[in-house]
Amino acid sequence: MPDLSNWNILIIDDEPDNIGVLELVFKFHKAKVRVAESGEDGIASMEEEMPTLLLADIQMPTMSGYELLKKVRDNEKWRHIPVIAVTALAMSGDNERILSHGFDGYIPKPVSAMTIADEVQAILDARKS
Picture 1: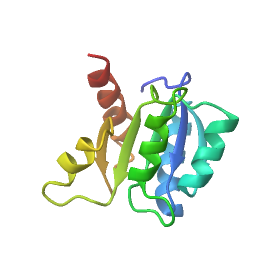
Picture 2 (picture 1 turned 180 degrees about the vertical axis):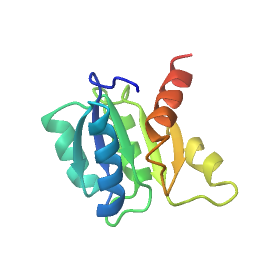
Picture 3 (picture 1 turned 45 degrees about the vertical axis):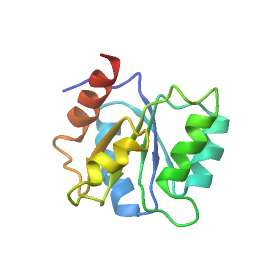
């Protein structure tokens, strides 16, 4: 079981069921987990405390995951933070389109509670190399 106790994850998603699964899995792995239900709330949460990782939905009302990513990348103090899209967009070409916007990784929904921590770790490891 991976030890994620040094992770400070901010989950930004408007669907409570998706948030619940991600929060449960990462807390089980000892990560610190915070939740925001909109892009605006996510930005406010980042102002209060810097996360080490963002998991963001793409399709959210008022501020999409793409708009959120742009705000993160445009901010000098946040641009180093890995941002992984966790999204229901899982049609052919969605992965490439999402990554082309600058996300560090892509995980389609529904996520697997058994593999999500390993998937995120693999994306972060690939980002380092």
